Image 1 (tube, rainbow, N blue to C red):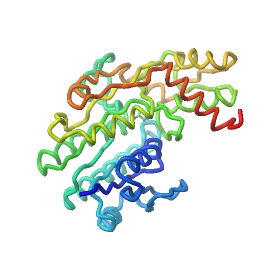
Image 2 (cartoon, rainbow, N blue to C red):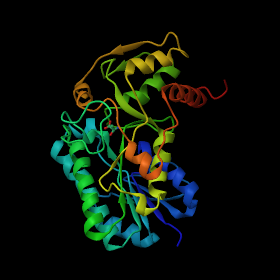
Image 3 (tube, rainbow, N blue to C red):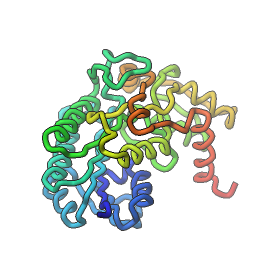
Length: 316
Ligand code: VAH
């Protein structure tokens, strides 16, 4: 039977790009994009949906005969610290609604994005393994670590095929991030191409696991399209792209913009980043469903500069 895919959080950094990939894969008419408000000029089917409203979610699932849900809505690490209890309530309530509606309506698959934010100070800092001890220091990280356990529970208890990836910081030219600690790694490129000074809210030497958007989207599709029996980890798979620091990005950008100016003014987000791993071991993703990243820092910078120049200076 043809898949009918619902995307929750279609206007987000990942959602904006994933909707297009899902349309390409499943067909334009087989993807229903939803978010809390209509922001893009979506050509495809769009519904305004607040995923904290289980009745509203149920109505969309039954109206379109949905068979898969990609649940991409969440309050991220930095914004989440402004209202800890509200972030926990919102992130968990949305996930419970998705899991319950998927169970009751016997959906084929659910994608739940996790994050390297699930790791805290008791995980190895370098080459962090999938089975490292999780003691996240942000509410966002806590909600993702708990979400992974709930995903595994719904698989074990109800047989629901929930799959998850621990995304690193995602860098893309197609959309802007919002409320994250890794958002600097997108904003820096916009400032460089506009030849404006960039003020970085992390220390120059803060190395973090990052991934290019195209790799993140391909990993998501490869995970979700893998045969069910290949998926051995039902909490979440580590996913690695490449790890680098703000000063690494700046040095690479200066190959294109030698005069690019940067100031470092670390804020509370430095404390969040300082508790995250520097690099991730994703051997299980490679072994179970053949994961292999294609973008290193040099290719990321080259692509970001090229694509943003096309956006900002189309006639050059
Ligand atoms: C954040 N972009 O900064 C997200 C991500 C690993 C970081 O989860 O909160």
